[in-house]
Amino acid sequence: MNSRIWLSSPHMGGNELSYIQEAFDTNWIAPLGPNVTGFEGDLKAFLNTQKEVAALASGTAAIHLGLILAGVTAGDEVICQSMTFSASANPILYQGATPIFVDSEPETWNMCPKHLEVAIKDSIAKGKKPKAIIPVHLYGMPAKMEEISAIATKYEIALIEDAAEALGSTYKGKNCGTFGEYAALSFNGNKIITTSGGGAIVCNDEEAKKKAVFLATQARDDAPHYQHSEIGYNYRMSNIVAGIGRGQMEVLSKHISLRRSMQAFYKDVFKNVAGVTVFEEPNDDYFSNHWLSCITIDPKEAGFTREDLRLALWEDNIESRPLWKPMHLQPIFEKYPYYGSNVCETLFENGLCLPSGSNLTTQEKERIAQVIAAFLG
Ligand SMILES: *Cc1c(COP(=O)(O)O)cnc(C)c1O
Image 1 (tube, rainbow, N blue to C red):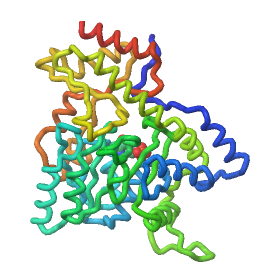
Image 2: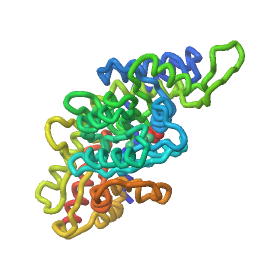
Image 3: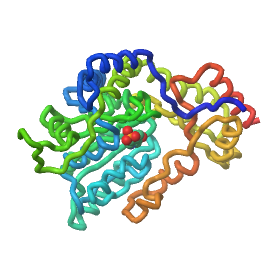
Image 4: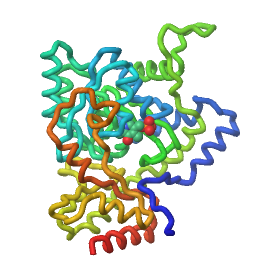
């Protein structure tokens, strides 16, 4: 059997262990320390922003804290992109709030500004203005942030940006993760850089960051004993894990070019194939890190389905995966309102994510190209 080719696997840069060694040497084995502070500084510099970054245990924790800081409580409504990973929406339920799902538009596959505004107007007409909006930059592709931000501003609703897949992506030259009042980054094992597990919240200023860190470290009041007047969470990043992050930041730019070259590779592989479209930026305003390379298949034109191709790849031990199944189709979320047509449903039906790691070798790429060529006949 051929060795497994993964969709997206961890790719260490080389210096991660020296940051971890330093943590051991100085006994900073705790959820704070020089690596945590250093990693936050590296992220802030990379994002080229005046905003502040707090390193957390996960991207999910970042979205949860964003909702809490935006004042979302039980009974509130929160608008969320339907086509996404469940971690964008689960924290809405942690707060006892109600998710309202919105369709994607076909250009970026992200939150459709038109359906977003319809959903807001409808909620207001029913007497309840949504408390927050969660757009996502799927597979690294920036959402239509200008339109979405304008709507958030017009209706005075907090924007919580899920940039978990989009570190290094930009829209009109501005980094994903710097548009929202709060933004979530993720460093899970399959992301463009990984700390094994981890995340970060981007906040508008030092005060907001302080509040995020306060909540992430059990909400201890200023007292000599343990005193609490708010619900706290254990959401801070470990100084060991942050050491991996510091090493990964040294190779982030290289990883972005390599991921982008994987997308170029698939454009070449499918260049003369009718009915197959490789996902790409709609125009020069968008710069995607191409965390995952994706295609859509029109079965009528192509003569095969995305399942046919997925299974052919799997036969050769090559992992690929359907696009995110929309949240409004998930058993846990299907009872909540949905605004849209069927853009994300069609994408789910016909879309496939292909192996996209920055660590794929020339031989592995050749194997992928050969299996696809053989499948296409
Ligand atoms: C990975 C991911 C998250 C969650 O991040 P974790 O660090 O795994 O908790 C949230 N949203 C999206 C879109 C993701 O891809």
